Image (cartoon, rainbow, N blue to C red; front, side, top):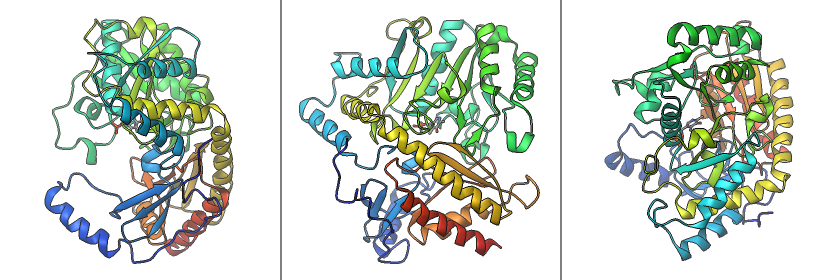
Length: 447
Ligand SMILES: *Cc1c(COP(=O)(O)O)cnc(C)c1O
């Protein structure tokens, strides 16, 4: 178990605001930042963080926020988790970099073993490491193409796979990710997903629709890979209808198409299991990891069937910083922490508590049209009452209201009308209640 840091005390329930939000020091830093950082790099809430611990982030004005976003699902086992920090610190003292493709080191192998053991399926697996989720996506596409000798790739509506130019072609949302950044990579297609709240389709019917698109618009003979997030992250925590993903994977298997699960947001304990694929009985050919894998240090992985992963020739995969030893040391600590199972129980507890409280809100506030998610990945979608029409502006108004009360919330959804929760798994029910009460108050102001 992790050692407690100064603010890991679960008795600490309330945020603490010492100034307005953002405070004077954050505002001053923000002015300086705008002179040297392009505006294209935005910040959801420009409070400048000085330290972080457990579910708390404290800014340079001494304001302490309850962070229900975990840096978009990265600090899953808590900010500055001691086990990860200690492992990374010890590694820093030994070796910071050699480049695995020049002279290798043991940690890379040990972490690949962990991923082989923990990702779904007991087939033989290989793992390569990169620096970011988008890089994992890019490598997965390279590997699938090399293995199949086919060119096309299909992603789903409402998908998000990153910010490199190949990933931009795969994303659903043009603004702000893709607009003006084209031309985009060819042979990348988007096909309909399963979105039960909006399309009302069963898993089987939604899968039949997706497969019809794949067959009509691409054809299996040209299709290298289908990539899917088990639960769509930026798309608004869309959970597909039961049976949808297994049917899609089965079609892929029948046609020699590589099925890639982008578990970058859903993986590593977030949903109460090692990987969200487990909830859908999926055994993906390739599994992508990043975000939560190294407790905040940059690292990403592509794990998959040995025969697919071994398709590229020696030298075909790599990158200077990929599998950095310090990140790897932190990741090994993450696997050890998650391995004891307590965190999975916490993810289930958080999911049950948030789900119950959010459904209560939905019963009292007709704009809360849908509540969904698995484990510590919960969301609600805001719609015009009695319809599934997205309610514009409400989600960001709620997030702003909450920020003014020390609660850090993230929005999501292709229409920006979803509030998503990605709390650290150290977050207590009492802390969640503080946030839900604030959201309740925000919803009352919306009328
Ligand atoms: C965040 C994310 C990515 C991109 O990861 P980066 O590390 O930002 O490149 C890809 N896929 C999913 C599902 C994500 O949530």
